[in-house]
Length: 127
Image (tube, rainbow, N blue to C red; front, side, top):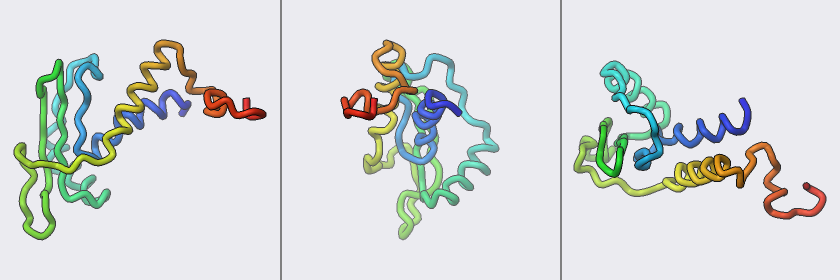
């Protein structure tokens, strides 16, 4: 896998492990909700593997919710279910925005994913 594919994959993968959604305009194709089999079987298993008690997944399109899903529980002690009204603590939300910004810079030819980071930092001898 080359760096470009890796960065693109990493920009999307955290959505399954966090309460983040996809930023408006970041998706150019139509979003289809996952199958009911995924929601009832696969997602709970992924939550168990990742030791994540609950999750909220959302997709925004033009600033409006296009799709959302909730699974698991909010609190291990009270067993309160995750719902649309659940208030989640924001954590690790910058990775998606950073990856999106980096890919926009790649599209604008301002950044080359195959060039060492030292080049952009101006580290002597590492160019």
